[in-house]
Length: 273
Image 1 (cartoon, rainbow, N blue to C red):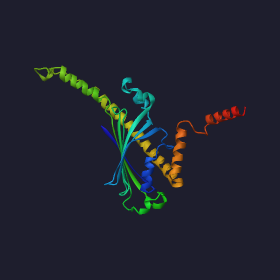
Image 2: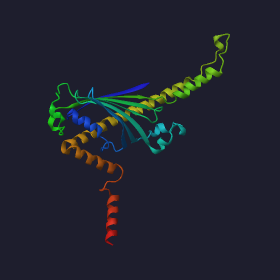
Image 3: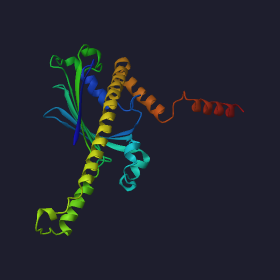
Image 4: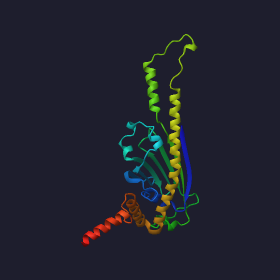
């Protein structure tokens, strides 16, 4: 029982800009749930001219209430109480050939639902790389060139599977096989309804994950477009400023918020007094 989701999208920006925006996409207004991003490993292969990167994302993530009620308390651990989960991301980029491959997978609750997302960013076959693409202005120097991306997501739930296998092993080890005189005396097989309910629950979890994946796909594209627009208007400096602004809003540090304004007024009145 595996669910698949696949989508294709085209950015009206050149591949160098899109690949850079990918590494600068968190945080953005559509991804305020991302708490932190850390680079675990980065390696450049001089022979192939390819850059390989491994990153770890910490995100706010909660199990849907309908699934949460069905799970034993001990299976979730402290991470579920905190509403956080880790995502492992691996990427390989070849700027010369014009492609980037990425793979992201969840590290938490994999027994409930394993989600593996693979993406391929590629310069269109009609796109021709020129020496100008190495300039700092990654957007304007290759104006008119786009970038195609294909996303494939695999969702698999193994919830309850370990318990079923453990019961089968216990029955096979502890219970001898009876010798029966006739087929009529054979007892009915056990575990049929248990296996059926487990399979149904797995399918339900996968379907809920599929719906959330579809919703997240659109938000991911919109977030990337915001980062790309910032890059087009103000370069890397504007992107970094936008990241800081988004981080402040996500953590309640927006200077325009009513709480912040009230706090500033109180501080000003105290200093004047």
